[in-house]
Length: 478
Image 1 (cartoon, rainbow, N blue to C red):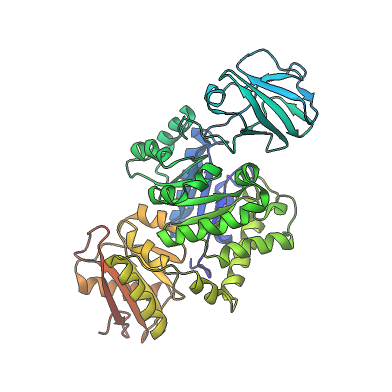
Image 2 (image 1 turned 90 degrees about the horizontal axis):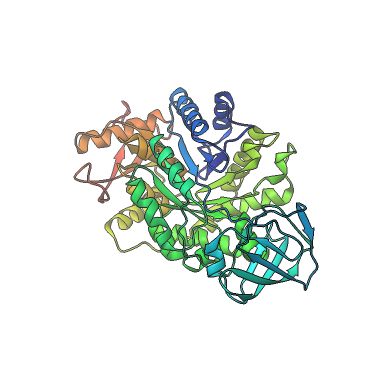
């Protein structure tokens, strides 16, 4: 199955899309990677979903990526004697460690790490920012606050801390159990929630031991402040606009999205734009015009992937949502302005052999109008460097490692094919030509550009650039 677009689509599975038949329909409609939200899936359901995705993968004969999204720390207030209370702007309200039911003056905050970290002047946002508090005094057991905005609070509402960096890491006990389970199930990507600092990746990286790639969700101001460091230590980044829009001014989110997207492109790391992209399609068969523009902007920016959340997980029109996103992406990539925008945002190559070869491959391919760039990649490095250039020529990524092909299904422009490893350079060239023809990217008489690392099977050693003509037998003529 060949996609007629370069940006990838990441679809979340849920009650509306958990059957094998529906997963197949979503893939046929355009989903390249499936997300399993561990906030809502137990281990048994997760394993069932992974198996269903793998069954569809076997049926369609294409590598499909799976991303398991860890819940991360969920910070919530305690309960109230009456279930909820009314507040007024300007009044004092206290968060403390007292387990007694709350009232109009106080409520328990069962998170000692917050009580210890919040300082005077720090804001606390309750219920997705509907209630805004400011700390006016604290003794590490009580946080006395002034109500800045909002008029009510109820049981177990979430707490966001835009000004506070917690000493605890991003992984909770639940996350550690979930991480062990998803790694055992052989997922391809693991998303880490509420990353604050580069160190938050260390524990997950140690547990994963290379069995899955790590995607950091940028959803806190503290992560934005240390963005470059987090990108360096991550395998991919997600612009998680939902929580970003709670902890930062809504008007700041579009600029941050562009900053993150461009920083990831510069670093050669995949970037996913997520949250509310086609939100109205949860209950309607068509999106709003504003949502179409939102998706289009992410595609014009050169994001690697665009994501559906509740639209595909719990909406009334999951297949329509994927198909709509697919059509929007195709239309944008055919727009006459698209190549110029992508070119204008292209970062300078890094001073490495791999980047120099990838740059030369893109320039040769576009100058000579070859049919495709065929890249051999065992670990994914060569594929990532080729995609970083955002060539306007199709990229066929060949890998002898199924796991690598699945992981690269998240990456811009890569059409991944699992093939046996080449025996030598002649076999590599012939195999590249033959597969380019089989996958309908080239035909007899066309030319292809081939990149690889030699000696073969040497990770990260992209150092070969070859142009080949395809003969009448589908193999290299020169």
